[in-house]
Length: 291
DNA sequence: AAACATGGCAACCGCGTAAAT
DNA sequence: TATTTACGCGGTTGCCATGTT
Image (cartoon, rainbow, N blue to C red; front, side):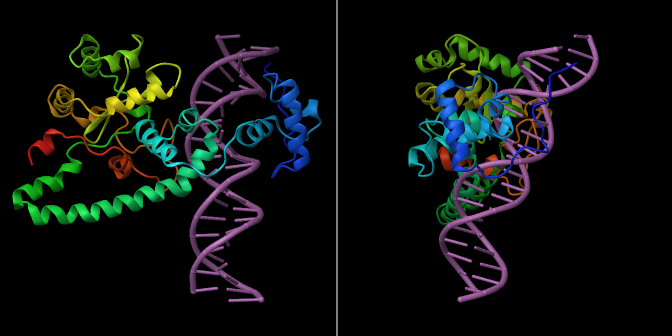
């Protein structure tokens, strides 16, 4: 029963690829394609490699039009924004950046972008701590300092998909015109109900649940909805803290961003709360209105 | 100049899901 | 229907280059 074994794992070569191996793989795929069967490929070419390894080498390195290094500011912004919206779904993020691989983006995030953003955050926090002390009354200052934790951070991966009936009703409301507008219609295409993602004092729509194709236009729409609609925000807060919703604790997957369907791995993994404000400037919320 | 630390990146590992038998 | 494996993905590791002491 079952399929035949993939390869003799004990006897396949591991480690860095030689130029000869690269040339063999590249030339074969360019002429014949993968044939949809990576496991059979190395045998056909005469490579002593696991099919899985061939696939990785092709996708991350040999494939045409691959870009390495030199991420532009625009690309950085897209990566940060998407990370905040959907978490560490690198393949989806890579789909928004032509020529970039998920591996490349993941590496870039882990080695540079994350640190860059955290450094920026520390700088902002330092300056933010000073301004209220100079300009505000003590009671206002206290309010200001409490604000960041007033709305909890939630898992921004699939964990933020709010399945509860009440929140579904809110989505229905969007469709019925309470906050209806042209961009929403474009984004939604009249298909599925988008899932809502709550983050700090902004709401996002999970792009995975909009349509099946990721386009720049769609991303613009998503960003559009990132600038939260005030009435909807108030209603969401009511649901979160009012009797009907059962409080924050009843919501599944409350916690850190970037732990999609699995363990958040690195001890230094960055929380949603750490970096979200660096990408999207805070919108004017009822908190700020109190100032 | 040598030893050590750090950063960047390619490749591997392991898991969840789909598909083949 | 059960079992087994391929595929695709995200997380992690290990090597090499570069920087610092």
